[in-house]
Image (cartoon, rainbow, N blue to C red):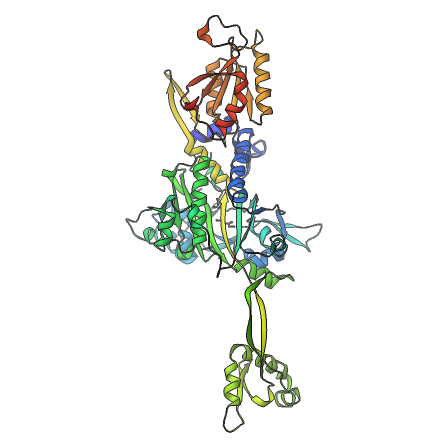
Length: 597
Ligand code: GAP
């Protein structure tokens, strides 16, 4: 078990097939987990609800890009230079640690990354912090930058380096020119992707919370920052706790409950698109089983912003005894598209058509090279370029020179730090009138980036319950039916007298209805209920003697009926067998409450 994990949850996760450390037979490697049958099903269901909310309901398009990309992509994105964590190495045992985590774990400082490497080094010295493994003092040790990307070679040899993507987002950005075509070049449009991302974390910890291979579910929304506005009315009444940067800096500061509309009107969330997605995400987290009393949005402090982000809020959940980031909502401006536009051979702009064509003045120059050549020698070409730039940025400099009453006015340009004066008559300056139907703009990006592993861990932690049934202790997961790995457990009361056969037929009918079914005929019926409770199965169906028309008296149930039991209340109802598939489907989809049966 790694530091910060909930012991009961970790034990349950392994025993019941949610997740376990990978390759345990070979000693295991920190930061890699295998999802067992229950975990893989839960993860799929969580991803499907995300897909429903962030792709289908929002009218976005989903893509699936490779997880390995060539080096130039990450040169352009800034990850090669800027995707670093602070590392400090123990002088004795040689173990490496995240320096900001050493500070956070042993002092009152929070978000130590925002303090910068120098200050973190000072705090390590001031507090005489030691190596978490061997206890040797770390004061005076260098705080280095460590790039988190996994490097590989594409093909044999080392001439074509590649990297495992550290975020799914870049797979969307690089394809922007083609994706814009698919969207008929109309802003705003959104592209989603759910898939694996890889980070060579210095110290993976807290179970699924900080791992080296994980799943992200990201939406990149491309907008025209001057025109596009979200329809806030769809989420304006959603209430969430907001923990502002100001509150974080105040000793008594706390998160405040506000509606999305209030957060925008107060100016707390500066960008309405970010506010919109905070609302969408709140609804989604609640839908998958996150406890809203252990959930908040936290604004990034200035020094904490990622290299691409202009404004950023995190969704956080209270797990592993601490507040943990489970999603980031960033206003990435035109950072990514401008970089790919600059570094690649493609055009990452969109042509924005004006409502009406507009007539604009366009200043031009046509310098007389027979004058510039002899006058400026080898610098003549650069002087001509500088004149062109000046005409665009300051056409009045040419007009003023031309208006000089002496008639010998000059314009001044700088080339390599040296000023050159050029008579305006030799510049060929003119102003043309041109009619333009639109302009090329770089869209801005709004990004809700959700971590699926942390969402899954949160859901398990927040849905974990212990109670007592008939004097016996019970552990169960109060998972929403929509995300539970199994929707219904089907049991024969006993595997004899035709009950097992009938129960297997019931299970097959339910599977045909598209329900996820677990058939279980081993052990006492109470034990079978407990097994399903532990993995969060919301309903169980028992086939008994009444079902096959052999009840000893009427109290045992009408012929052709089964018992349906609800996990949370353990209440039971008898239902005609033919109503079972539709009823269970409606219960799973939230179209019917168990109490209504
Ligand atoms: N594209 C933006 C981006 O990647 P991020 O805040 O670095 O932003 C987004 O990551 C989410 O991915 C996080 O909120 C978290 O849920 C998840 N995540 C990031 N690193 C992780 C790790 N090492 N282990 C598990 N989940 C991680």
